[in-house]
Length: 277
Image (cartoon, rainbow, N blue to C red; front, side, top):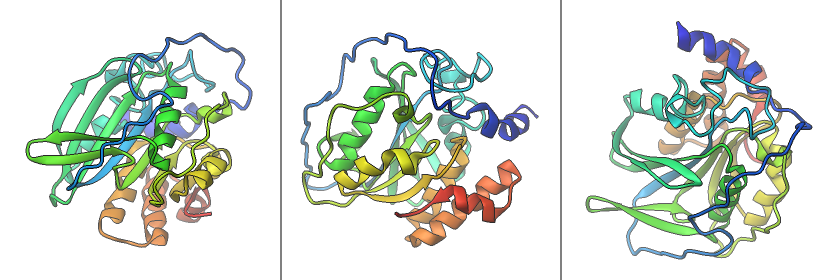
């Protein structure tokens, strides 16, 4: 019952404020590439999907507050976008399509990383939970990856899994931090690779367009209006993507599941979930 109620409330609960009322000091980033480049180009790499999740945070993000238990950006286990019923970690762990192979704690600005293997054995998914205070870090690393400026690998047994620019698809999930802050860096494509990306955040098409164009990436799915970034939208979009479906079919699959959970029409959902330019 709790999950059903939250599913119906999410589009309202996670609506973004266009003009946040306050700015709060956040900790300095202690790890990761910052504005530098980590280039690790393995000879052989598995098909991988890298998901950047900015944890919902009532205090540090310009959102309409959600219930406190879900809006603590330093508590991934109960966070709306991660450990709650329709959060990335909970939803994908329960999915029959994915098998959890690793979960680990990481230092700020990340809090946790989870690695899944698709049941087909053809894809790996790595999802990173960013502290809700670290929106700028999360956005920066996502765009560095999309542009090819930041590339990493991790090992899972005998398999090499690509992160950032080494991933086949990159996704950003959460509040649209570009509505609250500006990024000083530029993100030009550095290796002539055209990566697929999914950006599930309010008005992401409008706010992310300049960066995605500069990065030379392919916007497989992004948002035209207010949006609650529940995990099921990403899940079903990826299911179609891994089958080699075309962008229009991926959009339709994502819109269908969004319509199911939010009780809107598929036609309305397709106006919200946009593919391409």
